[in-house]
Structures are given as structure tokens and as C-alpha cells.
Length: 154
Image 1 (spheres, one colour):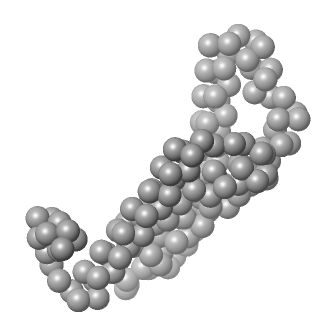
Image 2 (cartoon, one colour):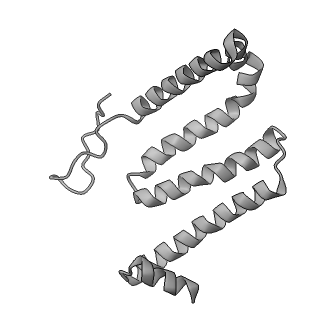
Image 3 (tube, one colour):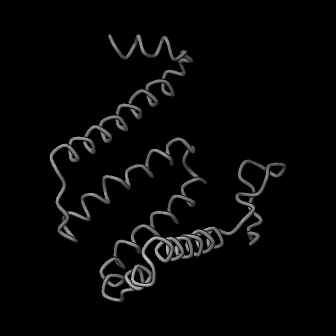
């Protein structure tokens, strides 16, 4: 679906903000996910697997999490107008951590200590990237990866 927006990002000669509507991406992705999930459940587990996919109680239990993910996806598209793409990707990886915390407190899912350590290390790696990225942008230093690794290890 074409976007109706006539705004330009960086000036009159630059392309429009997005050539498509956010809602069309979400609708297509959602339809593909539901269709593919249903087909695979039917393929691997037969009719009983398909019925489990459409269990009303399970759907209602997952509705709050699904709503939060859809909101995060919408915000990710909106943020592309204001934040560099690498930062949007980094922030979208935070969904892993937020999902684990939400699953723990909303659904009572228990994770092993090694899984929590993995999530903590993922968080630390993201913050390290932000620190390195911000340091390079503030000082406008253009360093190669070899020089960057030397700087980080000091």
C-alpha cells in the first residue's frame, strides 16, 4: 500500500519519508506469520496441532504480549524517521530482554541461570556498542576496526 505522506526527509529534492504505509507492512507480516504457522502446525502435527494453534484460551493469554510486540514494531518504523538505522536495530534487539522479563512476570516462565547470563551479556554488548559508537561520533574520529579493537582493549 502506497503511503499518502507527502513529507520529504531532508529537503525538497530528497525522497519521501517512506514509500509505503506502516500498516501495510504490519498487515502483510501478520498474515504471513499466521498462515505459515497454521500450515506448519497442520503439516507437522495434523489437525490436533492446528486446533492447538487456535485455542481461544491460549490466544487470550498471549494477547497482551502480542499487543506489546505490535506496538514495538510500529514504534520501530516511526523511529526510523528520527534515529539512525543501526540504533533502531540495536533497540529492537532489546525485545529479547523485554520478552524474557515479561514472560517471567506475566506468564511465570522460568529461565535457567545460564539463560539470564546470556541475556545480561547481550545487554552489556549493546551498551558497549553504544559507548563505542557515541565516542566515535562525538570526537568525529574515523578509526578502522583494527584501531578500534586496540582502543577497546587498552
